Image 1 (spheres, rainbow, N blue to C red):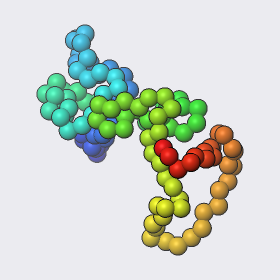
Image 2: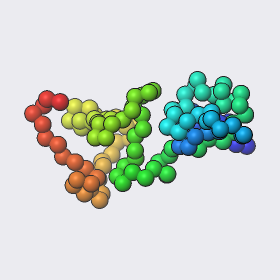
Image 3: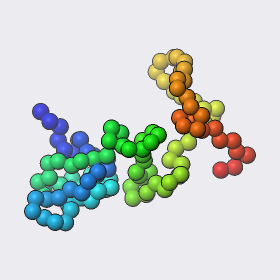
Image 4: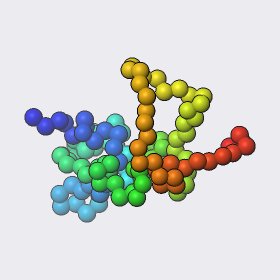
Length: 119
């Protein structure tokens, strides 16, 4: 049995405009973040399929493209969406272990940035 549409697409970003049959105006536009507010409208119009952005279909050259930081806040080119300092924020796990990095390419998979502590 297939999962309900709500469970499959909640919190995802629409990849292509969603149309009701025989209607020219989209019910949901491409790039829309599907939050709880959208589902009554989708259910009311009988929409059963929505194509959403995914890591599999992402065409970003390195990593995965980020479309939104939070509701209605767009990400600009070059904008930082996350920051992790391994010296001040520990990685907490359920299992002890060690990480070995493989295929690390400077400037491609990792960037070293030095600053004066002011950001």
